[in-house]
Length: 392
Image 1 (spheres, rainbow, N blue to C red):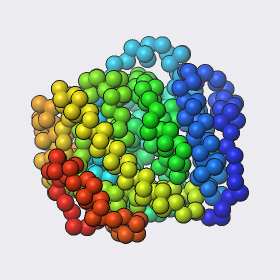
Image 2 (tube, helix red, strand yellow):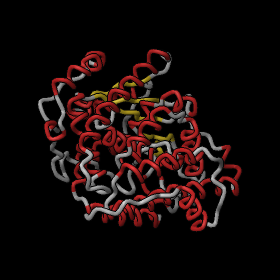
Image 3 (tube, helix red, strand yellow):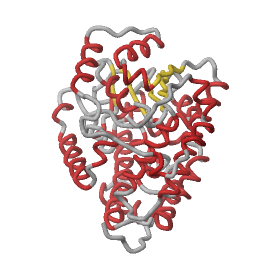
């Protein structure tokens, strides 16, 4: 794609356009504004967007602002929504690139669970109803949008596979407060990344809960099963909003994690910029793994009373159903009947690499595997992680 001339994205213009498009003006507070401002400035000065990026990124930002306006409006017109209870959600909190997507799809097969569906995360009102959810037109619209993106970048289907009517990450909602990994996974924005790692995320989780309340108020209920590796860096804010959350964390060889996430981010950001951001990607996302591990360890050490179930990627890959039984047992539950049957059918119908093999060479991203192995040795030892011989 051709390089775009330098563009300036103005947050006030985005806000005004979102208001004009929706006919609404109440964002439910100003918690999103600083993140929007910093992100716009960082994109304008650092992202080096190509023509597609210059077109698509402002559209994604408008979508986030527009859905926020509609969520706030829905709650104002249906005040009973604020009484909706979100009880004991089961939340997969990471690590990134350690099987969290596969795990979220298995959890979704339990009919007692209520996942966050990809199509509803960015277009949340009206909330789905039990009668209409299977044929909701927003599913087809999301499928068409995803098909277009697959045509533009076929590799994404291999690197990160989601379905329009399948579970998605919580960051797809948190991005509407502009405190979300979504934005720095789309474009390389060092200034926004620096701001994001230090900012209080409580407002993003409050907005996340409000969105779940809206979504379940239509009658599609159950215990929420959620996931986002990003949560592991903000567990204090997460558990302040969801104090009874049931937390699951997946672990994997850190050399593979670093290689895989560099591959993913290179593919994602390559849609929006043709510039060489490889050095930033390598340095930043290795540091993100370090911050994830530090966040998890600090939270566990400070909150030993909070139950977190650990899952090894090697176990999830080799024995998914046995691993699911162990996860449920960790919360004093059993799974038989419908859940295990549906999970079995999913495993059998979704063989690994069905869209192609996600291959990655650490050297391609300038990764020093020996240095990474040494840096993350305490993590490997604390959690008893099985080391891998190569990419999977």
